[in-house]
Structures are given as C-alpha cells and as structure tokens.
Length: 118
Length: 253
Image (cartoon, rainbow over all chains, first blue to last red; front, side, top):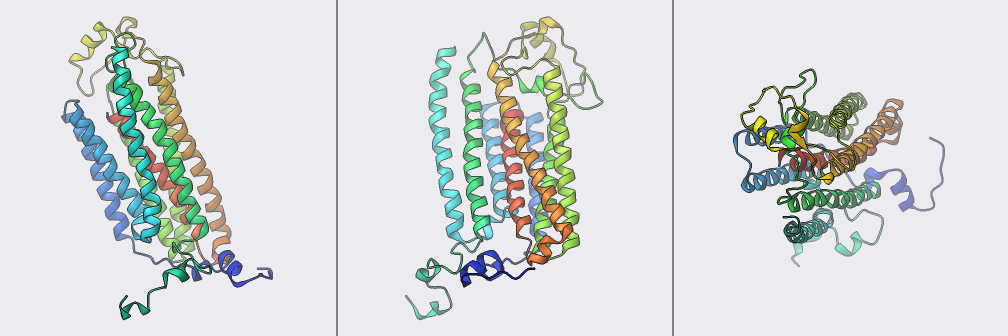
C-alpha cells in the first residue's frame, strides 16, 4: 500500500479501516443451512400443491403466502437484515408498503377492466 | 432514563459523524437502497402482469393461455407433458447458488481467502447454469411460436378435449386446429419480466466474476475485509428473491 495522507480521521475510517466503524461477527453456518432446507421444503410444498390441488383462488393465495415466507427468509437470513439494527430494518421494510398499496389499487382497476373484456 | 444506559451510545452522538448510525458502511447501505428501488421496478412489472391476467379472465376472443400447457418441456424429453419440472430445477439451482454466496460472505467474515474463492466459484457456476436454463426455456418458447406481440397458445375446443385426459408424462402433440391466438400480453410480459430478471442474473454473474478475480488477486486480503463480497452477495440474493415471485406468478399460478 502506498502512503496516502488523509485529511481527517473520518475520511481515514470511511476509506480504510471500516471495521472500526462497524463490526460484523460470523454467526456460523448452521443458520444458513437451516434457511436453505426450509426454502427447499417450501419449494417442494409449492410443487406438490401444484400437482395435487386443483387450481383455485385459494391455491393462488396459498402460493403467494408461501412466496412471501420465502422472501422473508431470504431477506432476513441470507441478506442478513434480521441481524441489522432496527433503524436499517425499518428503512428498508417500511417503504415496501408502497407495493402493498399498489397491489390493492391494481386489483381494483383490474377488476374494473375485466368487465370491459367480458 | 435510568443509570444503566451508560454503556449504550448516546443517540445524539450516533448521528454526529465519525461512526455509522446504521452500523453498516456507506456502500452496503446504498446497495440496500438500490435494491429497494429495484424491488419497486420488479413489483411494477409483476403487478402489471397480474392486472393483465386478472382482467383477461372473462376474455373469450383472446383468452389467457394456460401456463401448464405452455411451459411443459424438459431437455431430452421431447413431446412429454412435464409442467413445472424444468422451472423447479431452475429454482433449486438459484436457491443453491444463494447458499454458496452466503457461505462465501460468512467465510469472508473469517478472512478465509481460500474458502471465499471456492464458494464464489460455485456461485458463478450456479448463476451460469441458471442463465443456460433460461436461454433454453426462451428457445422453447420462441420455437413454439411466441413473439413479443402475439402467441397462439390458447386452446380451441379441440385442444381442450385433447388435454382433458392428459396426465403427467403423457405424450402431447399439437395440431394446428388445437391452438388459437392468446392474449398478446402473455408472451410480451413473459419476455419482458423474465428477460429483465435474466439480465439481472447476468449482471450478477459479471459482478461475481469481477469479485472472484479480486479475491484471487488478494485485493480484499490487503484491504483487511471482504465487504465487497457482502455487497455483491446482497445483489445476488435479491436476484434470487425476485425469482421467487417470478416462479410464483408465471408458473405456479
């Protein structure tokens, strides 16, 4: 490493020794593998439901519910968000409420358009 | 306030500089916000798909094709009715490459260069395998006659009769009279959404390759931390996350 002069302590911390700003600890691999097996099991349940249950709105809701569970597992454990600080978790999770709003709005609109088509 | 909170940081000091209030670096925080915006983009696309499909429910002139009867191919098993099989394989490939990615991140926390490199390589192989599968899936779809503005995957009364007693592993051969034009948005949204996701996978693989080369070169070892692996890892898991919903809306429902 060449010798770089830093203007202040903050610049030095942000550009070099980031471990002094924050620290990460290894939680081991057991949680990773547990999440993997749960994700695999949910996907297998998805596939079984697809072949066993006849198509219905109830089945669709079940698929979306299982998809959301998988999403929470991926974001929480694989992306490590569950172990982050609460203010970071809220900064990411709260804005996704816009998606919920958009889904509700578009279900209403889609219902209206379907009366045009039929 | 009780006297016990001596050890915990003063909230005013947290935001006055010199430390990260979120306990993450700038780069990681910005990756999170980028992914949030990307989540909005993908939900916009998926909700558009949902609206078109929902509103096409009563459409008899250009009906919505049954995904069951469109995505039922498997390599080397031509003409055999196998819905969901190939796409399930793709899902497992992507879940597994997510696991190897998170194992690389975990190895990075322990500064184990050899393990990071090994898991990064496995992740790249998984991503490339997924891309290959998606290329094959597109080739089948296009070969069947799908275009960006039209398809003929909806079933005529003859076609419906043909599929009535069709079981798994049943043999399927379409005559021209079996299929009629389906809703154009069926193929358009398939190409746009899976294409956009596939492009994300592709850029993820490129980022993974760059990071892998840097791991081998010892760039992060010199730097003292493997945070870059974490940042591309976040992106990679997001790609997996989007696939969960593409899988649900395009193939399961």
